[in-house]
Image (cartoon, rainbow, N blue to C red; front, side, top):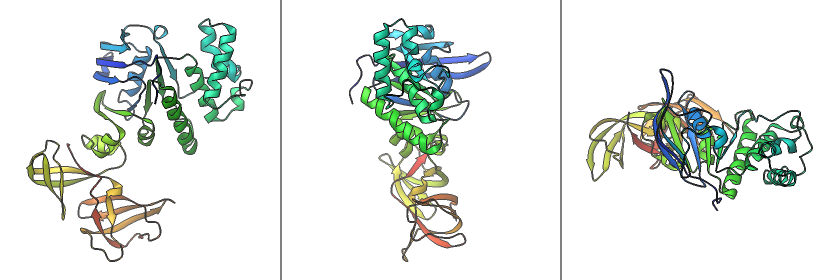
Length: 355
């Protein structure tokens, strides 16, 4: 991936935002490297959108510093920051053509008419809408309208692109396609991008790094793989994908490795700073394996629910560990509600977590 020459680093240094007595963002620190896409992920009210709006200059920090490139922009208004935002509502002008919508920011910035036209046409070409310039937004699908909004932001050649829940108004199938478009474009152009969503799958699909927020603070940050395979605590384990949180016991720790009893199963797992005693283990749904063809399992379970989803089965099982959720790729030999099965735990997808 090439990095656009004007792509900028974004730095938050103990940034706080308070609305009266309510602290929306509390002493948050992170860095976003040039040319990368970082997602702010978390439940409603966690502070992710406020964080994005502070990068844009639509909200002013009440403490800390915000840098874009080498410039301290903490108190600069939005008009003086080299950023563009794509909103979830698209915010297209219905009375303007697609071309006029894309060109709007350039026109307001005083660019020459020929340059405005050329850059608007190039922006539409980049998002796969060449030749759509004379249509009205109402003549486009939701996915096409979102791509127009992206083109309008792109033509300004910002140092940082911001995406505020850009796919929330699209249906599931279209969301997948448009998120692939956004990710491909971001990588192709080397854009520094900050992306806000509450959708875990979307975050895993588009991000170089994910910052998980909880109660106005950062719960954990890292690559999608890091967060999925090594969640820091119960909250992150449960929020990034599905996780079965079960009780286990560490019998011994040696050289950073814990000998863990999970029901009738023993596993050696990274201790992650935990010592002997009762602990929590996060078990991913795909890590619980239903034994077949007479194979022995670690323990017996009763099938409470069985759901066919085309590419896989989903089960709810009653086990000695408690009720667990299982994803099983074997659709040819499905279990049924009421069946008794034996199950085992895979080597991957089982992680010690802090409470």
